[in-house]
Length: 364
Image (cartoon, rainbow, N blue to C red; front, side, top):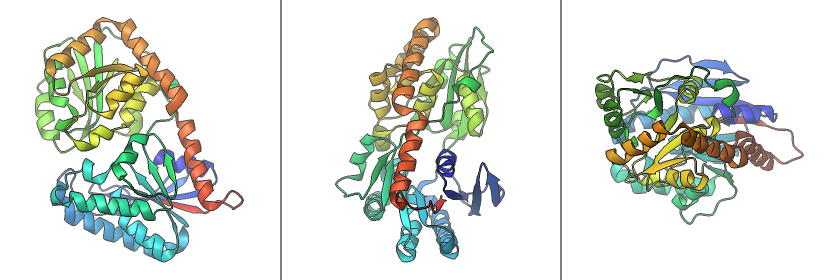
């Protein structure tokens, strides 16, 4: 959201971000890099599936109220995922606002909604149909929406700005370093990774994030002297951890439906940083890694295959540097943020009309 907001500010739009504070007790309002950040404090946990439904409904009610009270302060609503889409759609139609529906993940496939999966999919498609524009993170995700007619569609990869020059590490060591920064979930292949690292005490693993399985993952991680856990970190710290590593891991479980459409920022961050990436077979990540020859692909959950891939990269720095350079070239040619920013700004200018002054834009 910071990247999106800053891109629009640079293009002349005024941006307010409305966010959900689930219990971190962060400031209610904050001025950040040219945009105003407003947090609606609605208590709710993470990763509890349908048990989070009361909190989700309270959040949507709070968002609906904020949007209605401030309806004269904005012209465009940028709704991120189904968590925000229904209140945004209602206010957009009643208040005659334009709606941009930004689908980070297909809700029915990405979250544990159980018997409500079909309903979530139906709502998502209805919002996409009614929205003035839809943003997807990869062309493959068009299949998830099914046969729905969209007024406008923009493909904007979740790629980072080019921070490589300022993040390159000057503290080289002989130890082989692996990094994983993201959701602490068993479906990310973290237990096989920890088992491999446990058998190779001359390697280091940098681990950061939080998630539904963090207690189980950390119970094993804390028993290993060569695993360094950093907890919940800000974006720049996350990038610094990855920049200090030799290899990044993005092994998603292909049994999770949404992983077959995964186009994660970890992959594009690895490309930007010039790092080799290890991906799991049967996910969209493996297709991108093999297409651009920027890493190695292993069967998900296969500890021996993962160990063999990491052993190969640890033993051959020239090979892993070649993989990283291929990823860097792909980032520069296809995925760099300047290209994505131009697509976003073009979409917004199309919404307001090229000859009009940019209106205020509201983002969640």
